[in-house]
Length: 267
Ligand code: COA
Image (tube, rainbow, N blue to C red; front, top):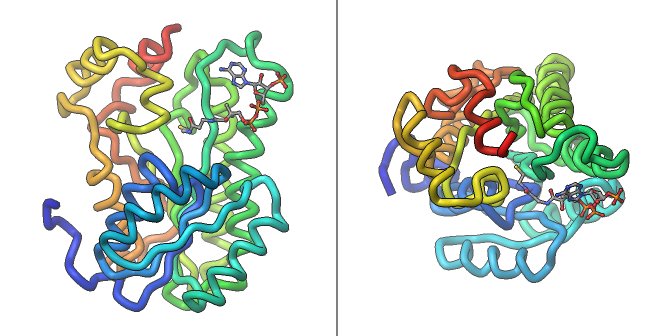
């Protein structure tokens, strides 16, 4: 692993709870947190997937899985209690659970739109709201995983644009309301990150993947480590004066507008 922000023991004594933690960017963040010494609880809907991810994390440190659908507030509350019992109060919450499929607005049913809004916006609200009383404060920090669609109107992504814009605004409102309690809340906007479910859905073919990489200002796809390094920085004391910020880590993808994303989703 490139050293970067990462340092052995950086998160020693810290407890993290990560929604949608069994795959992709969120699992990458979980792995970096575990390697940095944190006790990490990952949450997901699919128990089998969750168990596989926990096993992989345990090879590097302390990790557990807590199944729950982020749309179900009571289930999240229960999951948080389980983590508190096992590891103590949490210091870090990462809200990473998200839904996505490329489709034109007329191809999205009301229920399909609701599914993404509920997973992204309600799920993020639920996790933040339920975790607040568990967050060890001050010094606690929340990271919401956003997307360029939050501010770039993108065809085939009406549901995701609406949902991620909601996540961004929620991030800022909570930063105002919870700053006094010492809780910082920031968002990360990842660009096209290799080896993620989102990217497999948006750019399923090798040629579309390559086209994106070549067009990016930094001429490469992002890696999970790129995002995890930013996450490590944001939850560390080095970022203790940063709250309500939207941190873009996308190789310059959003500087180009939504054209490249629209190519990727085939519009
Ligand atoms: N195109 C159009 N509609 C779709 C769809 C697609 N590819 N996939 C799901 N839907 C619709 C369903 O048809 C259903 O609507 P309906 O009841 O009117 O038919 C609605 O979405 C809910 O589907 P369901 O499978 O019951 O819901 P869910 O709670 O499992 O959520 C997803 C569905 C697609 C939102 C969710 O499974 C998901 O996003 N998974 C992928 C995770 C992912 O990509 N994460 C990375 C995000 S960047």
